[in-house]
Image 1 (cartoon, one colour):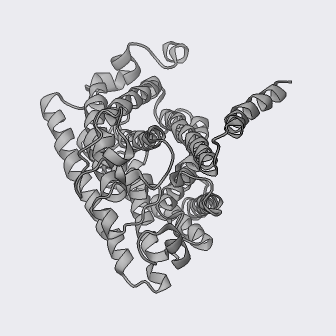
Image 2: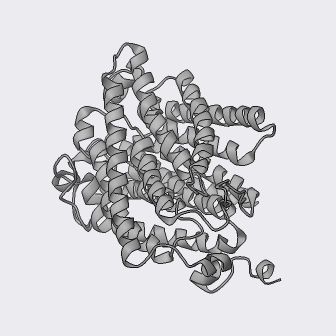
Length: 452
């Protein structure tokens, strides 16, 4: 009975706007197309926004129980910060008319139009409000990645101050370079859904935060050996990754902003899934061979790394290349996680390994495997090295990822370093031992368990 009513409700939701359009004397094919595109983008926004639930479960499950409530709560806080910051400044900096480095129009989005303030977004016919909401969801994902490097020891106000500046200036400037008509747009950098713009940018900020905050108490012995600090709920982490995986169907196909582009929607979804398979299988095999057991955290990281890597190339590469891209991402993320931990970087969420290293590989892989037919179809850049394109596109991809990495690294050091000098960025030892649930919020995320 319930399923029947859900079906009826969904049918009304989808068909009522279309029936109204048909009833109008002025109905045109363009209106139908714009309506379908708008519904498609709205669904993509919901899917990407739902990824925040995935981040909550993944990060909380990967942390100790005494910090779980804090991680869940700060996610809501950072989403609120993102919405305000992107509306006020970030959207204009990222996609407003301007120069090759940042936009200068469209701040405090209100009555602006694409023609007057956002010419870089004229490629799609959906309303400007939906374009804002879609790119807002991308910005929130990038900030969530950045905040992952601060887990279990950062003061709450650091998320607020850094989040404001990150979403107003850091992320939007990178987005403007690649997607908003900036210098990398003009060079023809290929990043369909953000391997570099979203993931590498957020991961680089997370790397800086991890370095400046220093390791969690007890992470390393007096001899410098890393100690295991497992999260409190592995089921949470798995469910969180599944939420993120589902959200990726809004992330990659949604970047088209239309379901009507000659089968491209299904193609992008297919390459995304095939790449994910490569990441899962590769990480499964490498952990089994090297560790003698199948480590669940490594499989989850391999899956996410594959999805990160294919985000930039999902519309440019052939299906076999998508599997290879995911496979390589799963392997390099496994080794990167180990090496970074051995180097003294305590990254509880493996943010830089999963989103940074895999994001770099995603940019490079497009320069290698961009297929001529797909490049012509999308109309950005040139064919890859293995298709006779020489090193031109690969060189552009390398220049782009190095420029983005260097810019975000420097700005993040400046911002977080200034906050550290002025107010401090890490809680006290006693607060860290007690847990951030109590020290920052006055209550436990699991009151019955923690007080027993």
